[in-house]
Image (cartoon, rainbow, N blue to C red):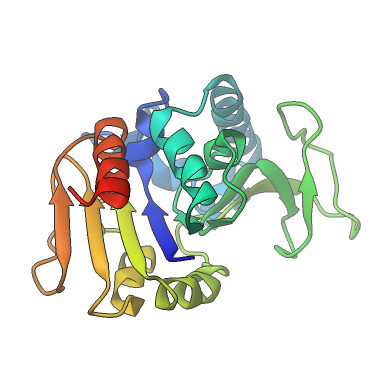
Length: 229
């Protein structure tokens, strides 16, 4: 069974109604990302950061997987599919994908604010101030913030090395270290890029571009994978 490795970004979640990480004005839901998505912001105003992510979590739980998510899950019937996502939502899992690696964490879980490896499910939609980990420290969103290491990047790199087919969906390849994962894919492997605006991939071999949004593009990808056209 051929292995398909899919790297997804904000573009696939946008079609489920979730805003991309940054709007054109550089803001995320009206906030400067450095006021809500850095360790320093958490130290300055943990209540603001907590409520910001509680709101984002409610949006995620209200959203539904779109047809692109569903097709990727359906591909598991005929391919060994690994999804590596930059997104912090759980839409891939809810669509039925069984192997999903979250580079930047997942908003439906919490973690200790002093030991990031202590991760917990969230009861309901919010983390409350005063909720503590087993070490007695405040729980925070299980999300990788600017300035923090990306603990799953090495796992993701190993997955990319195993690809027989590589697919990039809805990401501009602008955020590192995630953007460097394509470098771990063998040069002879076909690389499908699904995005209305193809990122700069001129230095890579065997690139096939599908300049469509995620839903339309993944529909086309499915046709190519099964029919070769």
